Image (cartoon, rainbow, N blue to C red; front, top):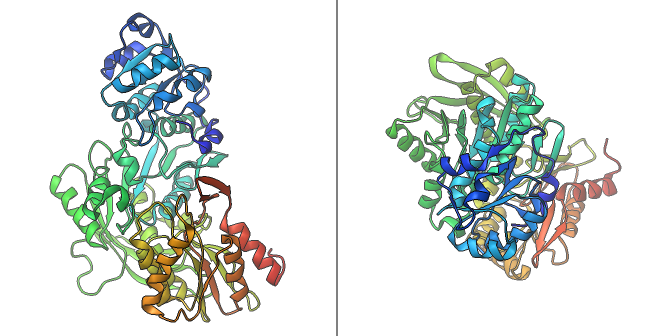
Length: 536
């Protein structure tokens, strides 16, 4: 179906993909020609696959999937006009395809979403088999960990593709990402392009939605990793157990050859236990948060001696592993939460065949993680520290603010809100956590979507009042998020830190079903320069 953000990803296609006969695909994946299309389908070949009519190229197979709101078959005319030579859909979509594009060959499958990943892998000639592939899942830390892995794998192999929340990148070509994990055909063609370009590795983020919706099917990763599980997406998964069960599907032989799981929370421990009990995938258990007593009990790798530097906001630590392995490392971001991300990346890299020295050196210089502890200004005696971060769940906010507090000699100022059309229960929890850990609060809008922004802010302030009944040190900005960011910088003194949370890298603000071009980082940079002068 049509998606505005996919238009810029059109270039992420291999240049010389050999055609695949449609008849071969039909036989291999049990696709049935619609009545009257038997002969037409048997004589065709396809050069690619798409599930998005606005991202379809000549010679491709358009897979019309049933959606949550509309059926992809409704966009068949657009796909055929763009060059699709045939359509795959389910029984419900056949009649619509016929009306939309009479004469276009149609194949059917009872569950086209379940088959589109392996089918796309076949059409693009299984590119993942020629790459070192990694994927990271969990609630928080996916993006940071995947960028750490990008830096490490690039140092190891000379190049790495990135597919995640922030961007889709192959070599020098980078475009905005429409979602955390792209649809299966986009992923497969990105990897095919990587093979053509001589890029040797892939670092992906795997969302729970993507796992359930089969976007990763057709790829067996060399290593997959799990960060943590915190309250999020319960509008989709309903319960935390359902959320974990979705994640657990990635830790099976159908999707990976090796698993690396952080066991710092109960959900990671449960996932590691069930994966080890199944005995089908080797598992490395990582404990990133320093603990007392027998550090190795219930773990394979563990962290000690984590120390945050006040001057450069980095964190050093020691990672211990099997056979007495001892890795002294530096994470370029502050806080134990980023030690977890760094430790996970290091262990995943080791299991992907990267030498420890190479991994440590690359990690220490992996600064550029958009919207993740992204420093706009650094404390220098005149300026305060100004940061943009993606923290948008109660647990993430707690960990983020504790990390920032460690590098803040003065006041901690937080600009934040909560998003619309998502889990409403987390809104007061966000307010309560922030009121407890920060000095000054500026409450604003995040992505209201179809909801009334005032009602969302009210829910956040309800949580704030649990800690500060009189709302002492709290301001509410009702005009525009950019005004709130500027207000946060206005409040910031040379010993203070202001952090704006919730949106991170996001290039749009979603309000009243509109996508308004907006990003926190340039707005904060402008405010910093207006207050303290140009940044270098």
